[in-house]
Image (cartoon, rainbow, N blue to C red; front, side, top):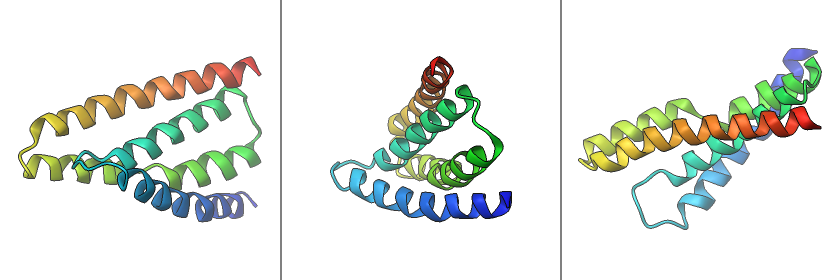
Length: 118
């Protein structure tokens, strides 16, 4: 049953990631990966909230592992950072790493605090 919940969550999360990335990136005339940053921060916020709320295994499998796992993307973050370095926009590459890590952790912590308060 848990595997099915993860599968269903991922079926929803992957297209949401793709559509959100395209929507956000389409509104910026920049090589900075705003779409990937957005989905990663949102995923950290959701997962932090679920963890703070101490939801049960079925909800965590569906929304945490499945949905958030498919929504967020460390591989694309890594690829886009390397791409920025290849394009010699080092400042954007460094900003991508720093902003992604700091804002992701902040979002997870904020979500945890909100989930715990509920």
